[in-house]
Image 1 (cartoon, rainbow, N blue to C red):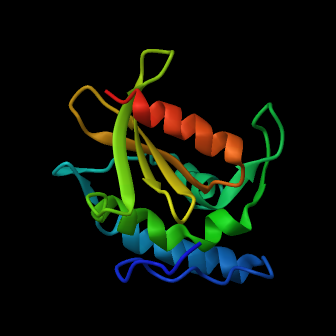
Image 2: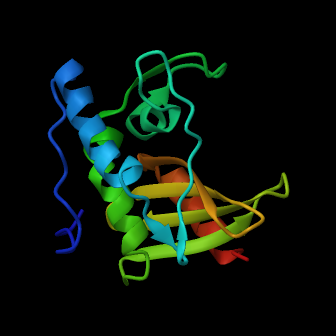
Length: 160
């Protein structure tokens, strides 16, 4: 990855993974999504506010962990994803920058998803576009594989 744009926060140190790291990440989530919501196309970004027994929202865990199995019953820390948590709000707010691609894509299910891709940083944010044109934050992650980059390029070329 080349030099980060000046408007993008630094990658966080999240190793070794421990409760203190999770709490520090939750401070970022609280600041960036609970205390005030970022705007996309002039509308507040929405997320499901389902809270787990630990007091943290499901979406928080989706932003810092990855699925362990196909049944989606367990998650494990995802260091590259978690380290870039401060990027999520920042990329939403800077989605018009040259380094960032923003597009909508109609999935095979008929749902329209919005993608924000920081190409040089291999980082992606995915939203579901709602009928009232708001976006619901689904996830974000660091892109590890070239195959996934090629899949995104195809979706970008077929954007709506």
